[in-house]
Amino acid sequence: MCQQTQVATVIPYWERWLEKLPTVHHLAKADVQDVLGLWAGLGYYQRARNLHRGAQWIVEHGFPKSYSEWLKVPGVGMYTAGAIASICLGEAVPAVDGNVHRVYARLMGSNAELPKLANLARGWANGVVFKEAPGEWNQALMELGARVCRPREASCSTCPIESQCKGKENPLQYPVPKVKKESVELIRYAALCRRMGSYAIRQTASSEWAGGMWEFPTREEPWSGEVIGEIRHVITHHRIKLRVQDVRDQEFEDWKTAEEIARLPLSAAQRRVYRQFVVMPTGSV
DNA sequence: GAGTCGTGGGG
DNA sequence: TCCCCAAGACT
Image 1: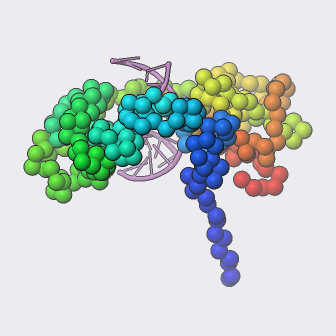
Image 2: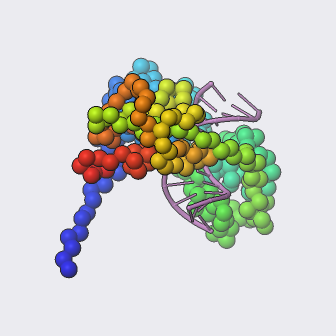
């Protein structure tokens, strides 16, 4: 049996970004729809909108030259501003991410919970940052958390500061776990309505979940039509059952072909609806 | 300051 | 297949 090996050409998503939006100017000028399209599948779609706004801020004001200026950029908070300022600008400011929270909590044996823990960790990191090489220092601290002081398997025997660590006897009890919010089940109904080779489709408002992304018309009330399947997906503490209905007698505004929909930014859940229930004429996708 | 946002990987 | 987990920024 002679089987030809098919080598799929997979372009990493960051290369797609760099190809389509090579500079901050391209990103700032891009349609937010194109940014969402590149972001599709990654979740947290408000971040894509903030990234776009951040690029526009930079084109208008120029690249920030300090931590405090970076903080003004939409979508850039204290962690990101600290990382950029210390690594790229050599400014002696801390870059405190979740890894550093954990390192701090174990090192100090702190039972503080977020967000208080974050404040304590940032204050501590601000005091110990190595001023001769703040970028290297911050990366080392974060890597210590990622590689050694790991969430579920702390490697204390290889840790350079084990002797000073107050949590080394029972590292996994730090940081204290945050109380989980009780999850809620939501049932939503998506209309799969095909007419003249096109499907009903709509763009969500920017204030809705996955704002600006496209979806098969989805609402809380059932449509009129047979339920042909159910997609389950989880968004933070929501367990969503997305019931897909074969809808016939209903008016919709926007219609697009399967090929057109394939190029629209869809969230992962809506992409699953597409893959499971929309059959491309060519059989692709 | 508490609530909110999406997805993929690991057990 | 199900359940649990995880980071950072905005409002």
